[in-house]
Length: 329
Image 1 (cartoon, rainbow, N blue to C red):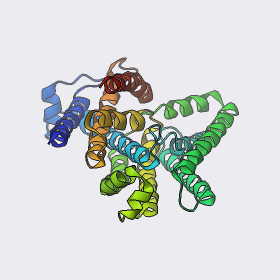
Image 2 (cartoon, rainbow, N blue to C red; image 1 turned 120 degrees about the vertical axis):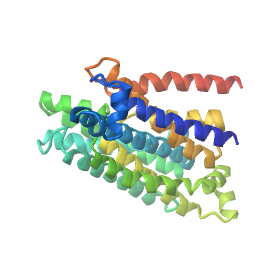
Image 3 (cartoon, one colour; image 1 turned 30 degrees about the vertical axis):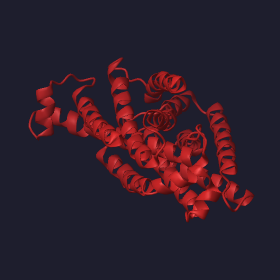
Image 4 (tube, rainbow, N blue to C red; image 1 turned 90 degrees about the horizontal axis):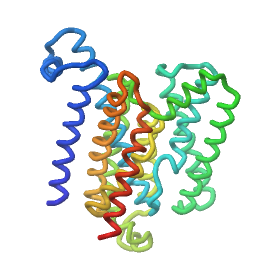
């Protein structure tokens, strides 16, 4: 019952965050103007601002934030490590390397549609490398080896990015750094559709593994005795969660702390039952990133703050408060 109440509350918060994102921005619009635009009325300019700029941005925030948070929760359960998240496992680093390389070679611009494709390709390469290294070391996909492989691959891509930036022109460096700080500014309905096509089916699939993850949290040997196909669950969970994270990073840049802080916050408040933890992590991550993007747009408007800065400034103190509460309890 507690999980159901929390789920309904978080769903309402997500809806409210989307509406607030459509209401506020650099251009001042009244609530009546926003409602009119959502219903198909108002001027052409108002409809364009609300329906083509703010609303797809808000929906992309829901998808990316929810996907990163859910992927982080799965990685933490799979690897039994509280520090596991897309950045630690090299996925974000691979995506960033792909994007930075294409920018440095002049193959694309920061606003080009080719950039998300390059970032997604880099993320897939990182996933393949991590899987390959882990499988070559142990066919059973030892979680410790998998985590170590992710750290090593992430460090390799970080070195590649540093080398590329050191050899690049200043305008390329600026574009790359801004992309790596994360932004939802380039959101379009086409992009939203692509991210949704990856994220939504994958998230439902991951939520279907909740019982298996609960059993595996006791121990892999015990889970195997209870009839869980441990190796199959690990491969499926890691692969699908990696694709979710890769899709989000490709279209929004490297956004830290969502996959780390949000699952921890939900776990500290509502426990570690993955049947509750996974869906609520998605909802909480969706609301968190959408509201963080809103703050990034309005705090210093018309200047936009990188969303990664907001997630760090908001997420870290919030996480420390939750951790302090948990230790006191």
